[in-house]
Image 1 (tube, rainbow, N blue to C red):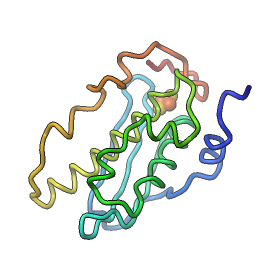
Image 2 (image 1 turned 60 degrees about the vertical axis):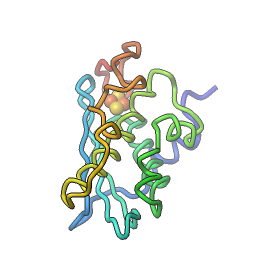
Image 3 (image 1 turned 90 degrees about the vertical axis):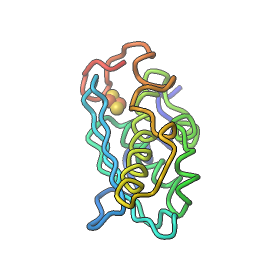
Image 4 (image 1 turned 30 degrees about the vertical axis):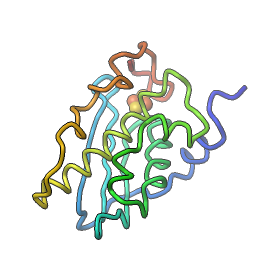
Length: 158
Ligand code: FES
């Protein structure tokens, strides 16, 4: 059986929404301190709806596929829905990721949250801080998972 689903391979080879936005409403940038991969997400928001979204990911194939799928899942959606997107939902939409690559999808969830928080902060919109935990504090975070080696760059990742 192939290690990666055809959807993962498709979003890795033909990532959707790659790039940046000139005057974004919100920007979220997160990194995995273990493997060093970085993900940056740009939002254009109108009336609390994400009308456009782009990403730049410097990372492994699973991180690129997760970014691509995550942006597809939140494009055209209200912020409240984007806030509820979990890394598990991103992985499921990709027809699964190998267990040792699940942490790559966590970056997408965290980058989206960071971009929403940036938008709220810039516009003085009040929010519940509990909706924005520090990256990697959640159960699905990288720290709890077994250490593995990045198949792309060979770096160690938890
Ligand atoms: Fe770093 Fe996938 S995000 S190995």
